[in-house]
Image (cartoon, rainbow over all chains, first blue to last red; front, top):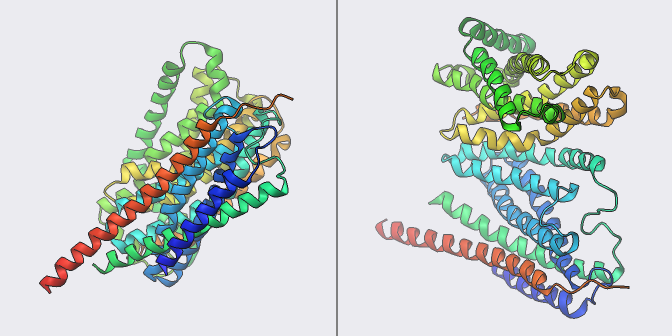
Length: 213
Length: 225
Length: 47
């Protein structure tokens, strides 16, 4: 199953790249730098999926005490952090030629960065607790609080910026997307989701085996 | 023992212990005074710079004090072998959480009031007209800090890496609280009526509710074995 | 209309770093799986 997912992901990713560079035309206002969006947007969408799974795994673990839920949460968190990092790095690289800066405390970037901090903390907690049962319990609690905090962080950061930032400075992807652009993002998003599924599957296998060892 | 009595029993025990030893309180109060100097030295002699940064410094000070003080209530339990006693308490363990939360809340509140008064004194800030608004913000913000701090404090008290993990876990969770309280404090000090910034108040209150509810619901899983 | 100049090196950097991240993680998983199977083979033989 994992293998199939892996190969599917590779095919989808190749198709995505073809769509990004072969099929998608050069964007009018931003030029070819805009192609980074085909990486950035699917990446953050996949990260959200990952963290939703962390929440699911955390709650399910506390209710059922079955280790496989903890494996899901741990795996999803790891891969979610990877995709969040890709989101931030690609966003920053896009921002440099577009806005002139590597970083700006705009609402989107800031709350994505906080998201990264929350789940890196989650992973650090897991790394520092040796006993598997305690680790699963603590991680679940942190996972639940972290997830509940996400909408609160979003609002607070957005309002924080609304005071200080002119409305003209929109986050990447804020402008309405034409249909063909949405199609390319969709193709990449499917590819990323398949890649995510493959990684989660593989990572969960490893977690299962490690637990038995 | 009914629920509220259990919670209050924990609170009373902590308050009594604290009143007798005054360990945490004295050290935290002194720490807050030290922060006053540190902030002044870090920001330089320009009075206006401090005044502009004041709302942020106030809450920065409270968070730093919280990082030091919030984990302690559970470490004390572990050091004195009371942990097993807590774990074996019959009934709903969340009563312990609420008791500890109230204790921590009180502790942080005392520290914050000292900080506020000292800021007014040392940085020459007129607090009078804004006092009522400031108190409301103070109360709401401290609930949020204490709620998450008590939960994570209980968790990290059992770990060898607690000094590292507690701040690492607490700070990202405090981001919305910090943003809200600083904005509200800023507005209060500028003389704005809180009604104008009610969206921040609602966010703060909402966050407080979420954190306390999660704390109440998940605390037993931290005590478990 | 003055279109923005192309910044292919930025595009390359973004995609390149993402690829490094993904491939790096894949290799990390492979290494961990390998370490697991080696240790299992070891204990299996002993048992």
